Length: 94
Image (cartoon, rainbow, N blue to C red; front, side, top):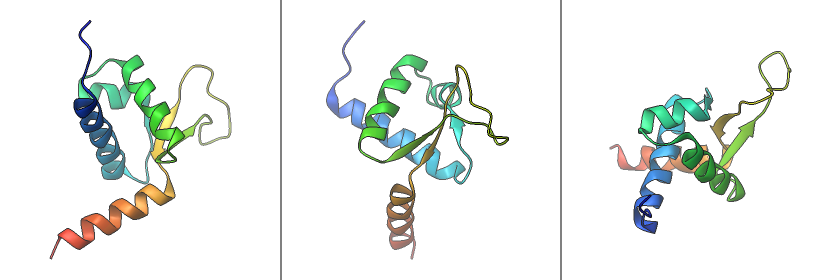
């Protein structure tokens, strides 16, 4: 499998953050993000873990009733990332 350049990987991460911002305050499953971006689920999961390490996304392991997912994870923007994105989009829209 060909290696993806760091530049393209950063663009994919930006696309993930943009997608999560657009659906906010909802969260999306890894599979939904992968499908939307036409990428492999495992690859998207790896990128999401990297974004989580930078405190840009949060991992949600429980459903709305508090039951823990066995094999699934939902993702949402962290509050800090949402506020930064919101500030950025509001400053560019005159």
